Length: 88
Image 1 (cartoon, rainbow, N blue to C red):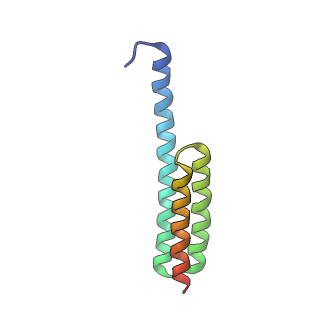
Image 2: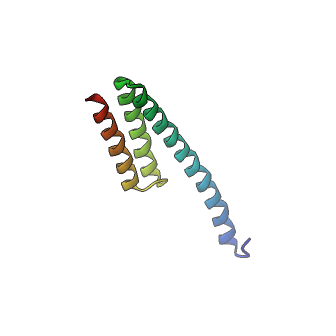
Image 3: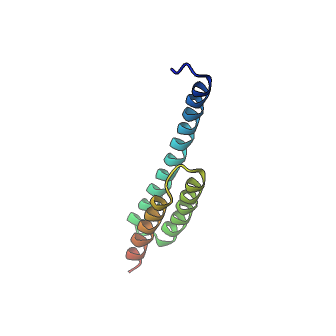
């Protein structure tokens, strides 16, 4: 560990942020998996609702700085594309 007091504090802060980011990312993965499961079942209504929930979580993760805004946009568009293909 560092000898400088501010760096010791920074190490602790980084550890907290890492835990928070991992929790947010885990929540996103769960929401995306629920969406994929609904798409696989062919349930359009459930897939739409799950996609909306996943979109909210992705937007919140961007606001918190856990993921990049382009990654969130790519994931949301990917879900929307798969749902659109399912409806055909």
